[in-house]
Structures are given as C-alpha cells and as structure tokens.
Image (cartoon, rainbow, N blue to C red):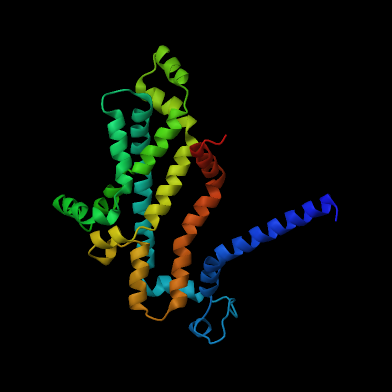
Length: 277
C-alpha cells in the first residue's frame, strides 16, 4: 500500500472518529429534541424509539397554554440580559485598572479577586442571602441580578486582554490631550471586542442556567426563571416528560442561537486568551 493511500486512509479514519465522537456528544441533546415531539406512550414504550411517529407540535403549544412558561422565559431574558450588561460595564473597568495602572496593592487585589474563584458558591450562599435580605431584595429583580453583576473570571479575562493592548496607543491618546475616559472608550474597548463577546457569552450561559440562587431568593412564582420553572414543571406534571423535553428545548435554544451567531468572535477571544495568534 502506497504512502498516499495510507495517508488517505488515516485522514478518513480520523474524520470518521471525529464524526462518531460528535454524534456521541450530541446524542442526549438530539434525543431531547426528538422526545419533545413524541407522545407519552412513545416515550414509555417498551421498544426504544429515537424518532417520533409524527411531529406533535401540540407539545410546545401545551407548554405555554398549561404552564406559566412565558413568564419564566421573560424573567430569564430580563435577569440574564441585565447581568450580561453589568458585567460588560464593570469587568472591563476593573481589568483596565489592573492592567494599565500602577498603584500600591494592585497585585494583592488581583490575587484576592482570583482567590474568590476557588470559593464554592454554596459556601457563600447563606451570607449572601442574609445580605440580600438586609437590603430588602428578597423576591425582587435586584436580588436576582446584583450578586452576579461582576465576576472574577470576567475581571481576569479583561485584564489579560488589556495587557496585550500596546501602551503606545494609550500614551499617544494622552499626548493628544484625550481624557482617560475617552482613551478607555475610544481606544481600549474597540481593541478588545473579541474578549467582550467572549465574556458576554460565558456570563450569559452561566446565568441562563443558574438554578440554586434563583430558587433561594424567590418566594413566589412571578419572579422564577426557566431553570426553577422547569423543576416546578416536573412537580406539577409528574409524567409528562414530552412537555418537559419541549420546555427544555425552548430553554436551550437561546444559548445555541447566541453561540452560532457569534462563534467566530468567541473563538477569536478564546484564542487570544490562550496566547494563540
């Protein structure tokens, strides 16, 4: 067998292996999508079925008709959108300070911020709840949003990217008489757009799927988000798994669509973080 044939066989084998791995990873999500169109009898059939006999769009209609799903969806959009905006406002500011300014205690502050990543959220859950309760923010949008207004990962990501912004650009702006605010908004932020998009996606996914805090801080159905709503959905409809699958598809769709829309910039941001050019 010639070397060219061996190379071709190796390439085809590699591609087939990657395809098999992708199918294996995507299998749960694909079955969730398929089950959302099934009936209860098809899901609990003794013969395993991977495809529905027909597309039962009524499952999606019933999710909104029999369940307060639209309210949960709007709450998730509002809370997650506010958290993303606040992270995009505050994290770059702190990252810029840590990357481009020299002042006493800067490195200690950075270490303290990074150390918070090692603290599990469950360890600070009760103190955080007591603080929110003292502010009177239990069962309010402020209580859902403010604990996640800035993240240590976001600060670290912004700092790492801003370290790559040449100081000459900033010095040139100062020589031309630009204020620090103008330098930040018109010179620095445009240069780190991939990092901002990466931060937005990471924060969006993390808060869109947040369950524990949303469950603890809400006391009524009006402010519950999708993850908590789906959990209550199972309690209300104990065996209607086809409706649960339909609700899960709707909940996962915004994350998938967001990543597909900005995946090129997201990959640029991750490449920049790892040092690849």
